[in-house]
Amino acid sequence: MTAPLDLSPDATEEEAAAAAERWLHENLPPAWLKAVLDGDREAVAAQRADADGLRAWYAQLGDSGLATPSWPREHGGLGLSADAAGAISDVLLRYSADFDSPAFIGRGLAGPTILLHGTDEQKRRHLPGIRRGEVQWCQLFSEPGAGSDLAALAARAERQEDGTWRVNGQKVWNSYAHFADWAILMARTDPSRPKHRGISYFLVDMRTPGVSPRPLRQMNGDAEFNEVFLDDVVLPEDALLGDLNDGWAVGISTLMQERNGLSGRPGVGPGRGEELARLAARTGTWADPLLRDRLLSYLVEERVLQMTTVRAFVETGTGPVGAEGSIRKLISSWLQEQAGVLAAEADPVGVLGWPAGSGLPSSAYDFLSMKQTAIAGGTSEIQRNIIAERVLGLPKDPDPEKDVPFNQRSRG
Image 1 (cartoon, rainbow, N blue to C red):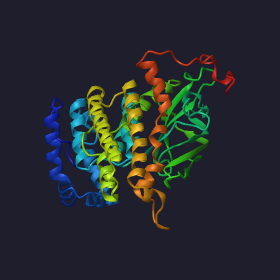
Image 2 (spheres, rainbow, N blue to C red):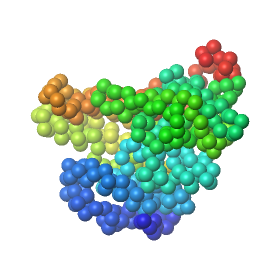
Image 3 (cartoon, rainbow, N blue to C red):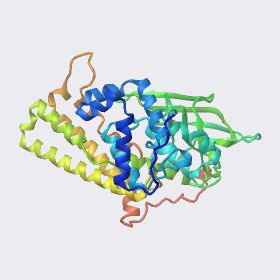
Image 4 (cartoon, helix red, strand yellow):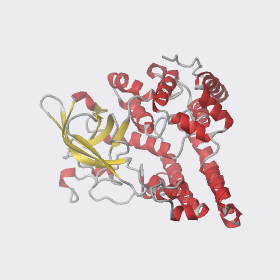
């Protein structure tokens, strides 16, 4: 087992970044390190495609504390300030050494929420597997009738005489649920209360009888989303995270982390702008001065978001973030949409057709995926509402049934 990095909790950004870089040079597999230093993206991708090697690397990274630098030392972190932790994240990003996308739900959502609201036993049980990348998590929040209006969720968790919970309901848009080990779940525990005040938050073992994930095929060919059916799922008493009927407050802390994470990791460097420019150069569309101008404008906007994300990470760390997370997510979603359009314009032939039996070209994939971030983690319309209310001070949309018990509302 790798020892935690010997780094003072008072380390500056420069000290943290230097220590992380030294550690990577000493511990990153030689072929991986060489590929990074040579700028060989294909060789880096090949290293990360080795599933066994990647698992071993995640465990080593988690034990070092670099995977969760702002977590308390007693839970495997380094106890660093937000700015020092952000500097480490920047180094990991540059060395392509960080966790992959599925780990975001555990490390970015479940882990911070458990740290904030969990009991000592829940922290001891769940945090090690999250920081070492050994346990995959999914998020069971949205429902067919409760998407943007999440507080209208109808999944029920009823306490039994023996203290356990019996859960019934349906969730949807659950990324990676088909191979997740655990889930974070919001369910209604007291329908006699208004919709925001009768919800509780649970930690669910996805192997529990009655949990049935079903992948949903997306138009870009992926099937990472799922619908999940919960049929008489029995959860232990200690599955409850936070206080009974206080799940909305717990869930909000998760949603703030999600919006923060979906706007990008803290780090300034090459991104989609460079990839789009290379695509245009390869296809010859770089010769179009109007497209070239739009590509350069995109690159500038992307850099601005990256720098804003670093500043926000310094100010908020990994704790709950406010409306600034909605601002950055809104811009990130807009950039993803722009990237999809630009990919189609930079490679018009690749978007319109490709050899039968071959996979989607990256340009077609980007075009078909362009609305993804505008929907995930709260739609762009919801983010605009949050910004309007919490930043601009505009009044909230009227809800005449806000204080009506959930089971007496006309809509459910």
